[in-house]
Amino acid sequence: MIAVVGVDLGLRKAHFFGIHDHGGVDLFDVTIPSRTIRNIRSIELKEIHSRVKEYYSGVTCPFFVEEPVVAGARNMRVSLGIAQTSGAVISAIRGSSYLIPVSSWKKETIGKGNATKEDVKAWLFDNKKPYSVACERTNSPQDYSDAACIAVYGSKMLGLDL
Image 1 (cartoon, rainbow, N blue to C red):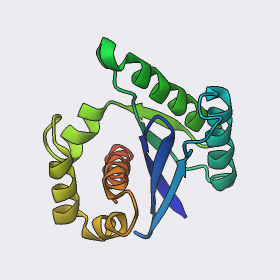
Image 2 (cartoon, one colour; image 1 turned 90 degrees about the horizontal axis):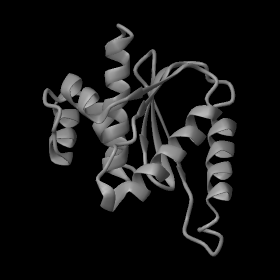
Image 3 (tube, rainbow, N blue to C red; image 1 turned 135 degrees about the vertical axis):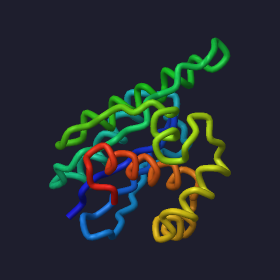
């Protein structure tokens, strides 16, 4: 049974890293490819929502979702789009969900709130090698590494420390 899920968000994607109570993992991603209807945001969001709802239909564990970063004026559109993706994901989840600031999960897992992508991957490899190996076997190892660390953060917050 999945005990906790960490979610790393993107504009048209979300990567999920579930940790089972016995230590196994479950990886799932939703990626909306570029296509002619790409600019119809409502269709993209409905697709994300539908896929997440279908995949996690029977799962009621807590989901820890990376909070969208508030960026400067140059990246405001991307920030707002990721916030929309967050809403599509959270509304599809049956269990409880928690928005976690990037600096919080990095501080609690890696040890510094401004950890780099390399720091995240190195920490995961050194401290949760089975999770690191699972991430490296995917087509998006960095996104899954972030999601795995978010799940580890969630498990700590729940007192599970998986």
